Length: 243
Length: 243
DNA sequence: TTCGATGCTGTTGTGTACAACATAAGAAAA
DNA sequence: TTTTCTTATGTTGTACACAACAGCATCGAA
Image (cartoon, rainbow over all chains, first blue to last red; front, top):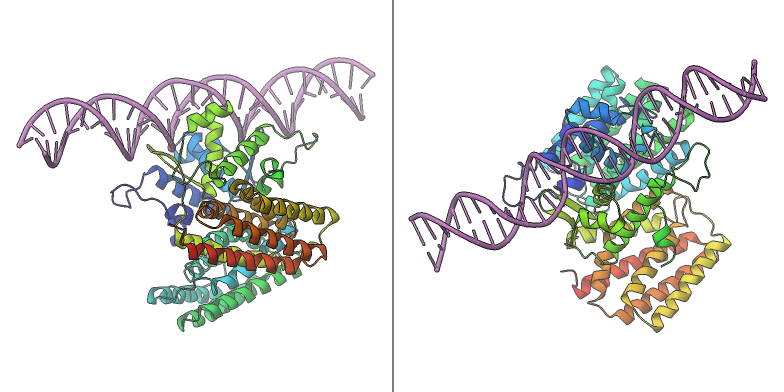
């Protein structure tokens, strides 16, 4: 809800070094690209575009007031991230993830979550600690009034907060890619589960992680995260909500 | 030298399911895309296009007998993989990797190499074992006649062979991405090192891995690989060939 | 001599028309 | 009725012309 839409992709952020301009006054073309990229990725992982949806390049071009060309550039990136698939004569389809691949991604995400505490962990700043407190507060609020969409957004924001705990940039990129590949599948399954219970568990996860972050134990936070990813997957599997 | 150029990217391979055609008779547009993508990626990581090189879309279009449009699609993918960077008014430049990021990628690659033995390890088939024997033979030959380019190619082929030891597709993708990000930097540094010694060490690595693979101990092979990645990085750092 | 402006050149970014392609509907034949 | 061929329609892929932009050289003025 907050820094998601405006957040720039790391892969591009670590560039953008114009000759001598203001650093914020980037090309404006790049800025627009990032904007549309974030918007579409958000729609995909918030299930505004459920798996199987056919996106029309022309419709998107009209929506953003540009031609198909820059739209195609964005769609190409999303395709390279595995979120879309374009086939000539058919359309650009939002990908789905079969159960097998889903399990593999979750396994890998567990390991990467643990690595956050091992590879270049960064001592949490006061601002970071405050951020986790905010997330915890939002978690409490969510328990009071459960809502799938807010749940998903809080999940996304927690992920980005956790990425601040490591300075290993490649680890961030990889983790983000895998996260966005599975986030929508997880969200889709939530509707088949006990929302109140899931929200409660998630709120406890945030509280535990916040505790670890507050005392500066990034490694502990990483292990907590890992265990919760693991348990989340087990619960998902038990409900057999995956297809 | 063998299956590299013709190898299709996993991200695309796990698609390509036309209605009822021959399965090999894919779009031809996709095929061409894959072909050019592999060629350019090969040139980048074999230092035919050293870091800093400015690629011309028009020149590439002329070379492949097509227009700029499909070339731009390929360049877009390479940019999303972190191998290129396009800026308006300047050109498309082959990226370089600064020493800090290089170390981070190596750290991560070490962990991922270990994961190959943990996540969905697959018992080596007879064909796989034979493949490793071939690699070992090429290693022996390389020791007899050291050559940087053959060294690089054998390195690439060993990497792809190792990827056959896990069925975890996301792990493969991620590892491949990181490998290609650092392969050219490693190759660039080789020229500042003792080629004969590096080749000898590498040949021993292949032999060790082959031994582990032959008895079906994928986990051991993964640990061997991990340790060699680690040692390779230490040697690279000692020569301070990185800038 | 030095500094600055200004045009020149080459690059990527964008818009647009058309080609290639897949799908479904419909008509015609068995 | 069923099957098959044809055609209509909508999609992505490609080519090409032009706009936007950055860098450099050249010229001019202080």
